[in-house]
Image 1 (cartoon, rainbow, N blue to C red):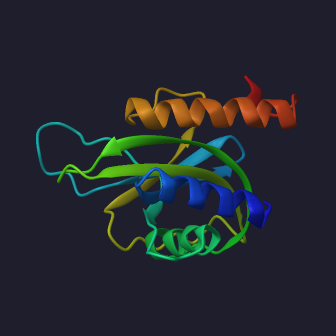
Image 2: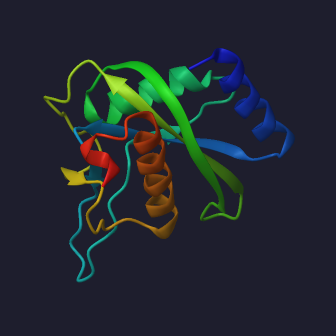
Length: 156
């Protein structure tokens, strides 16, 4: 992915006065890696994409690689595309923009979790236990994948 596009996303967030977070889509043959927090309550928490908070001045590609390595132990070999973003307010009321990227990794195993209790490879065309915002991002990713290769399994 061109550095200029990453720089533009970063600059736009600075102009909009929003903190940046990263969400990463790791696709393994039409299945996406989702992480689960330790869930001891009666209601199952939603699953999440690997990601991280972007540190001040940190390049986005560095944040993507760091977030994936920290949360999964996987090595990012490249950012394929910017999939989309959404804005929200943090628990303390600060504006946040969560940028989502599809990446390539050296291998999809072994996964070494650091802050999550479990992971799953969930089919992109399945009924995923994710937030509505993440569901929209994954739908956008399916459409991008379909446009790139209309004969793949993710195009269903």
